[in-house]
Image 1: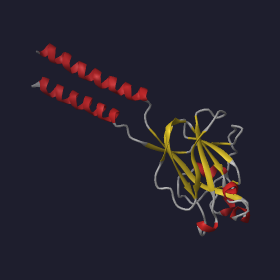
Image 2 (image 1 turned 120 degrees about the vertical axis):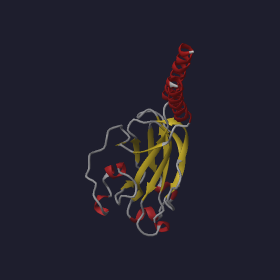
Image 3 (image 1 turned 45 degrees about the horizontal axis):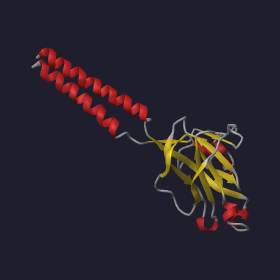
Image 4 (image 1 turned 90 degrees about the horizontal axis):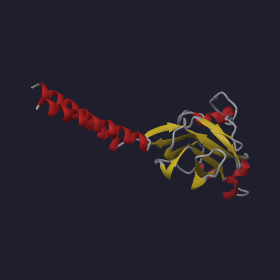
Length: 205
């Protein structure tokens, strides 16, 4: 009777671990650090609600739809980190007051694993014409995400000259999965649990 209870409990634990390892949950993480092109963290700024705070780059480190944002300068590039986590997809929230058609703004997105190294472009000409509803897969695991304003390139002499500002970033988030080594570790633990059950079966038998 005791043997039956032990084996059932152990089997449930083992199957739970295997199930978790086989289908790791995607975790969304908002940007935690923003860098300029020289790799230096930009200054700490207070998050201010309203237009007077639109040039505070720290506004990009908040969660989405919180009524604060950062207006990129035309051609400006920013590099973001996400708590040291590696990611395989990203989502970008943009803010535009008024009619988006009157304020067309675009960015290019690139990814990399070395702050001062090469970056690979994964998305071109993301337009602020509508809200991004899905995450965009970047085809690998990366640590840094670079956003470059391309408004002036795509709209020379156009609406970008109205105020000299570019893409308005509300927030950036990425999705990450457990590293392969972590998954293998979980599988190893579940295998150990199964071995213990088998040994108990042999001893009790």
